[in-house]
Image 1 (cartoon, rainbow, N blue to C red):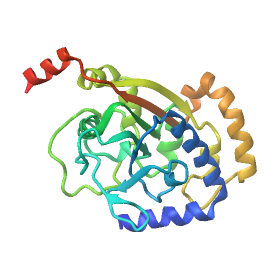
Image 2: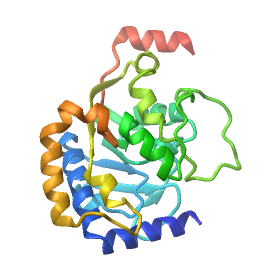
Image 3: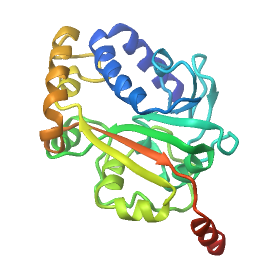
Length: 255
């Protein structure tokens, strides 16, 4: 079933120009935040990032012919410090234990490397839309840094759309305390109107590609002012900084 979802999304991507227009804008912003070097894409889905970031290893939780490998974000099969960038688009809110993912991201990222995440953002406007019209839940009471045993019966695409927003707002200090080597560089709210009007990966759309381009141009100008109220997406940029001798000593003592 999971592979069928990826294949369905790949078909919609190929047949829906307005969707490609919107995600091209997303990928443009993501690539602008990446540093030189090899990138790892987690949750590669329909494999579209390769069009915009050629030096990328694309993975997903299930294998697919257009991806390079299958990988669980909570237990990455890659060597320490093997990537300059990790990119995830609409993936973090599907991860059962985000704290495990961030431990893995810290491990496989090189010093100075970037973690660039594009996720659902829970703003006053998007919260109502997501709760009424989106199949994935919005559970604001969840603890995004909770650890524990993994649920063997959990489906790979189960989700809580609130997780990224919770991490970057009310739990941001806890996140930074847990991962001092992962420095939050930027949190931007975007995707105000074009994305919800497009229907996303649904078959319907209320706008065409030309209209979406004009809306996106407007959004770029006004998102810094009203994005926190109307944004449907949150773009998170995190840098893996070199551990200081004091931090390494503290980490060793904690073990």
